[in-house]
Amino acid sequence: MAKRILVADDEARMRRLIKDFLEAAGYEVEEAADGEEAVGLFSARGGEFDLVVLDVMMLGLNGWEACREIRRISQTPIIMLTALSQESDEITGFDMGADDYITKPFSPRIFVARAEALMRRASGPSSSPLIEAAGVAIDTEAHVVRVDGEEVYLSLKEYDLLLYLAENRGHTMSREKILDNVWNYDYFGDARTIDTHITKLRKKLGPYGDMLQTVRGVGYKFEK
Image (cartoon, rainbow, N blue to C red):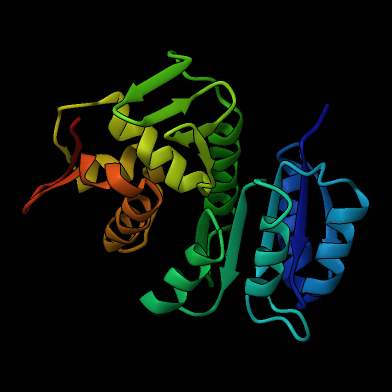
């Protein structure tokens, strides 16, 4: 069964461009002309989408607000699509729960590749069903993280980043390696995005946040 993708953009030509390339790659695509329609479609379909693509600058309910509404009820991967390129705008998207952030103009083929990589990460199994360290437990089958037995919400990228560092426990991972393995080779954003995610992860891990250690000038490592 083909995977289903929801694309919301108030520019009909942009929706059509994205839809054509995604359908050519074998995906089913539903369109929404604004954030309110996107949230309505998502709810009406019971959240049965494998990916949501949201343009940021839509009239009415904008992409950030739509992302926040969808994230309240689902962990479906979300890509934010925008003409904005400031780091603060990118951070806003991640704060709302977005998993990736693509700036216009972009190559449709690169867009499809990044969408596919994001969906693979959302559905792909891990070799180890449970990773534990101190009071942190990562259930790789359920894609759930618990701190002292309490489940904490992580965005897909936060989860991927934590899992990657935990699977390489004790080893320093450079920012370049993290971008290659978590954001994939075709990510063109600023490496400081990693720092933002690490900061958010440390807060969510509470008393165990210091297990995510900074190795100055190199990257990060997970150390119990």
